[in-house]
Length: 121
Length: 121
Length: 121
Length: 121
Image (cartoon, rainbow over all chains, first blue to last red; front, side, top):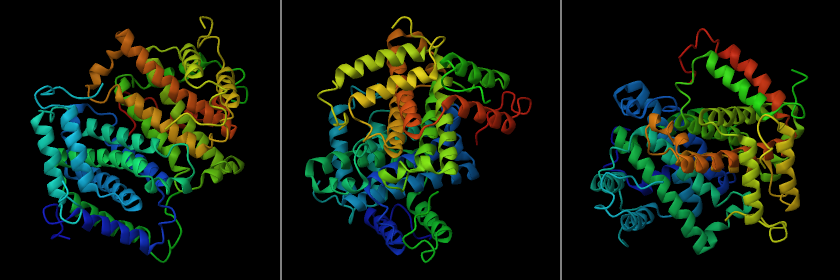
């Protein structure tokens, strides 16, 4: 596992990891986009639980507590697994899609205009 | 953009893409884990909207409609962006974390026992 | 408890029930709208877990299994608790707000036009 | 509408309001528990958007801005509508369920022990 890291791992490597897990259990029958979108929202909620009652500033401190960090990181991995699973089930190339979306976002939120100003609401 | 695809793109490449977008706008002040976990859940909900009222089987057909697929893929990219952003903000290596989680999942859901049987509930 | 039912209980009765629970624990310090909105989304996700992997039609059968129904109903109660808590924290009258929203919805989705046709997406 | 308020409105009144809206459009075919749980999570996410990027303390100020309050209150009403819809679709009496859950919560979080200490995580 030590040699698996974000510098050396492609998105396709991770998609394959998830795909094999699903195929070994014959779970593709459950992995419809509808069910996977629900699963993603459920895992995102489990991640939120780690920050539910704390201040925004305190949530930045979680990364300094190894145990709390590991627990939160595991939820992030669950979110990522379902993101890869839904991409697999719909045949989406994530890298080209996110690049295209970032170009669109850059047009919507020009860097000068949104300097230090968030985009939402 | 044509040369950006999941075969050739590392997770670190995508993390950098998101990190640069955030830094160009000085948005790291908003990118606390608490806010990013909320953002992830919000984007997951926007993805669910594409499948909200349809049957499970029909959700598998969405990938065959180029326009509907593109719209759903864009939401998946938004989910991935925030997943990368929270990994950036907490210093999480996604590839090693997801590999470790998959080992744990494989122990929890042995392939023979969970053959064609979903894990939840 | 037998005499508490939806026919005889006002929305204000339920708001008071939740408010007393919160005040007895001095939890209003945690009950900011931001935290309560997160809590609502977390409880909604827990409710979704009961229907995550099953077909739409099978989700209608859950109400026929007393144990499964009780478990789902408890999650619905949790969602309602946080809905009442956020209404309490922001001073929202739910009954007048929902009536006003229904008038707006009826204009957006005229009954003839949306006969058997869902509104979303 | 002026005479509809939380003091005088029973939970059954609101359930009926939602039920009539659904029946006038023949939407019960879409109102399966699975779809309604998704809808609840989607509306909870829309409510979160109002507090996504702001500090916890600032979220308490939203109630002092009539326009922002009205917008958030409308999302709360949407959450409540789907809570009532799923209770209708599963035949759940909300008032007795929430009372029973509060008794259970009071046992789980004794007032003395959890004085000023939140329950989660």
